[in-house]
Length: 427
Image 1 (tube, one colour):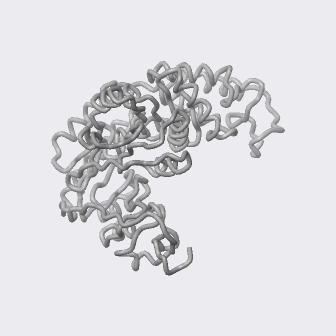
Image 2 (image 1 turned 30 degrees about the horizontal axis):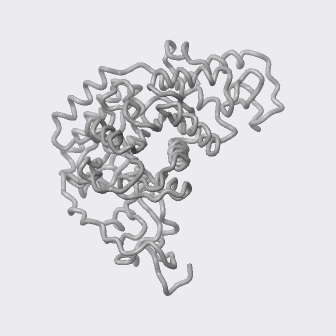
Image 3 (image 1 turned 90 degrees about the vertical axis):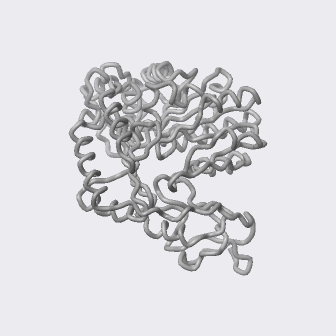
């Protein structure tokens, strides 16, 4: 673990890591899970290791520390990724009486799935676009929405942060819960003006996405005693009963990891001087506009062993973190400078307003090439960022099929087929 969790000063303050470190020094013959029987760092609930489902020892202390750092009444470590945090928040919202939820159209697939599981009706709030980049929802878009609560993504996958203070004031005025998917903003707890936890009633930090934690490490938090009590019950429903101790240790480590002010300053300065670099207020998001050349630039980098976070067919996005080394950041600057010279920006066609036809009926899987003009019957999109490119009920266009075919990874597509409503065929 020390190969990844490198900061000694931070590790000295981490309860779960110190428990594992001490246990690894003792004689240990494993007749318990997991099946690899190593019995050192990757262990199960033992007399000394505490229990995430009912913590009283090192895990309880870790969660208390995390809550204090993030400004929460309670913080719950999850080892199943931000998705479990999102599902837990929505389940809690339902328990607190939410029937209709204002949801930004750029929400992660887990939000749409969570609404279906919890029995909540999502009311889609449409954002705007600039150069083909989705923008956060605005106060104007919320004014006429009939919903019991508001669910927003902040920051979004391009680094944009909505007017959190205004949305918080709106929710206070109208008595609405505010839920925030902050999966890509765990590092922002250093800056309370941008941090989801400074405004939300419940929020999730996908710690592993922007802080030095192992994949699937996340935290879901609640602001008040009432929401914390309800969230604890929901987390217990969705969270695994076999959590990874290395992941838990890395979550605590990541939340306690020091701020990298040098990198923050340098990244924002660089972004401000490059016309084709976008990324909003979040310093960790470096989005480079290539337009129709985006996939070609992406492929070039991958051949050189350089991997971006995602390519959406317009923007090639790179994610930094406080753990990004200075030498790697400087290399990225040089590589992007060269790419900008090699691949000019060719604007993509303005995306027309999605046309929605219907959301019910018999379904059929058809070849993706033959789906244009038909009505999408299952959300699908690029993976990442895992936001719907096509939503259920939307008429399928040639441009969106082009993106689905060009991307390295997608969801909602199987064996080059897409689900459509087709009353003439059996489901």
